[in-house]
Length: 530
Ligand code: HEM
Image 1 (cartoon, rainbow, N blue to C red):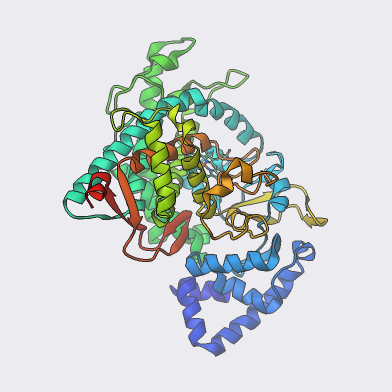
Image 2 (cartoon, rainbow, N blue to C red):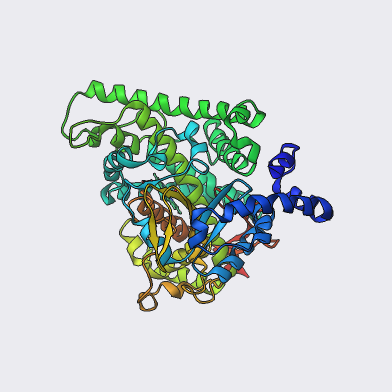
């Protein structure tokens, strides 16, 4: 309550921390209050099974360890070293939960049936006004039906057609890079460039829409970026967890305005496509005949068309609202995650020139005709070392750091521990990927960990950037194909070098870097001259 009160006065957790460090007597009073609430928390059922921090440290959990910056992530590293597999924990002064960071402990949770698995309201609920009833936020039967309907849209035959789009979007980004280099700008914020490029690809794959977003700003894209930022802000600022206050606040009003822009954009496309289909009349396989005439022209199907045509076993399709929600979800779930993955892959390769050179040699052997043609779907399976570098980066700098769930029945973990039904579970992808029991020297970037020879005996739940089990990422093959195309095309044209300043990690829905992730680039022709 005291924390909430101080935050009301406009203090973020970080500035609250610095105030408390300066004012020891205020800190002691706060500690007393929290210890008294902490003694209630330690009586919470899960704490009987899971070791938690000693009562005095509950105060620290609540106040100081809410940070999502470099220091906050290093504090998680300490936690993993200390507790090895799991612990009871506290989220601010109000919520308690179980944190899990070992493959053996998360296995039963990730593989549990969707009927007993639920997404919680704190982390996922705030997305509802934007994403509505989409797959990411659904539970139970509703989720199962929609997952069955959406799965064919990610079939390999469909994904193959998107590889051309990935090549095109990468070419547009590289043309921009060349222009910037000509203007002597060689330090680039990878996040900025990767975000607009992945969004460009997604808009083309989802709506066959050429937004030209890599060249000029668009209202729709600005709204998506605004929504992502506002979501993080709301999660971090406790008073805004209260709907009544949030919707009356300035950020709440901005959130609503951005939602309207996004919803109007998708509604228009869905309605246009629906009437196009209705005019065509029934056909067995109409998807091949669809062609969007406005904007980006292509003969192949896009995700919206597939959603419009999908039917379940009872012949029931999705409503316009459901399709809109899924389309909004693809834009959210598919662009920032992939942009984060790419930015960190280039960071790791910049820091390890030997691995970058080995990838380049491999890519050259596959792309014998140099820059002439697209990288093809078939080429992607001939890049084993590049794929290992991508996976190692997804381990060390996973775009999504944690998942939260609760279960409608008690869940068993090794050591006869029970997570009582309804308890909040934080499945730490970051923790599993950096657990020294699973990955020796976890902070070292070593792609050879993913050599098949070195992977024997490793748990399938030791590497989970796309989560695992029934609620894993539906877009993971889409994402892996995009990552490989962008990395291969980029390394075949540019050398990536460390940037001008040290990089500090920052977790905001996806893993980012404070002040952007600056890397230096040079064309290969340029580096050969030297
Ligand atoms: C490197 C890129 C990506 C990463 C690291 C990633 C990671 C994840 C993770 C960890 C989840 C589980 C989330 C949870 O349970 O709360 C997830 C779910 C999901 N992802 Fe991805 N994702 C990526 C790219 C994509 C793309 C490109 C798309 C779509 C085009 C996509 C669509 C989805 C959807 C729809 C879900 C919800 C699935 C369900 O609940 O059934 N993702 N993703």
